[in-house]
Length: 176
Image (cartoon, rainbow, N blue to C red; front, side, top):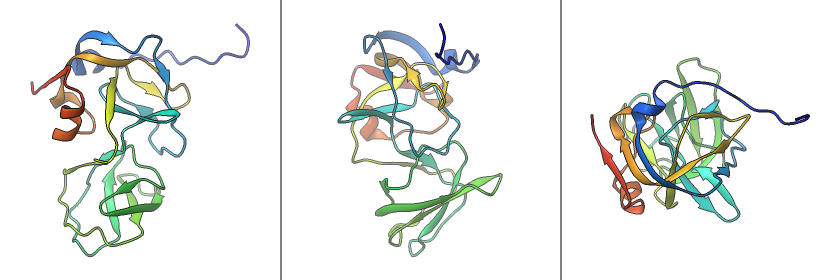
């Protein structure tokens, strides 16, 4: 078919992350990935619905410790944070991606609570509706969204918290 771009990439960890898919949103959804600096959305990433869009849950992993009085926090590459997201007691005003090891995320106010390296940061204001079934690039963000099944939490790129698990009672999360 002319004019349709598809991305056919095999991600070996997808079958490790999604252990069992029992039910999904029929037909899947196209994620709104505008503003993401990540190149792909990984399997197991929580998805939120903010009318009218399905989006990856704003989340990331802290690269190095940061004091509560700072406005800039370094995050590991592959996060799902965007300018305008509300995280760390403020709103993200910029994301500097120039360093090859981390992205510097700047908020409009001091973060208010110290963070430590490898700490998962999740936007608790958004309620997850499912998880991405298979890794896709942001150029082709049409994904299956699992709403019932099993996820190997230990294999997730960005860890999740108890609020995400509570929002997804039909998905069993386990560590292997």
